[in-house]
Image (cartoon, rainbow, N blue to C red):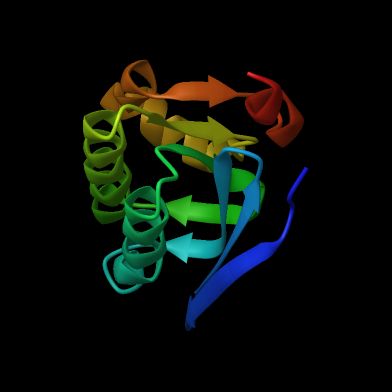
Length: 122
């Protein structure tokens, strides 16, 4: 399995790392995803999809906050990944982030996994 580091980005309250695991791109945001930090996640997500990573796993274990702008970034990435024949899988969401997806109904359009390992196995 190739678990090499692909890249990372950072701006203030959000850091994003990207790596590959076989056919999946694993994107790991750590911190707060909001209006001010949305591009820090948007750019690596779009790059991962463009580089042939139509199956993207978002490891949400370090994501402490997500507002509507962050949710829109993920919804846009989902559309891009689906157009490329893949999808966005969300893993290990913290309760405060999971609540945003529950309230908005966005959990219904993503494949959500309890753990990163489960997402990679699926």
